Image: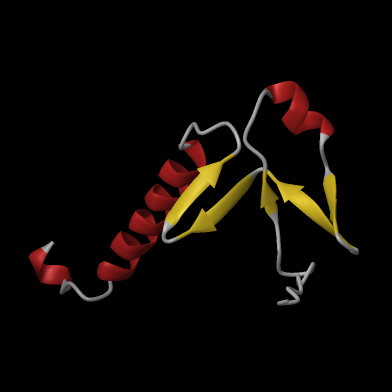
Length: 81
């Protein structure tokens, strides 16, 4: 039999469900580890939140886009702007 070990410091649980359940569930005990729940998680470049609203993902994309545009200003000569 395979023994699976969970690294509790690197593991989070994203619980999807009603607002009542999400707000009242803070920790989940798995075997001998206690794992905390999170409001949003990043996986494969997408930020998913527990209410599936995509607001965290849109904010992350806008933040990254603004940062990249701000960095691009340094590469454009000032006489072309």
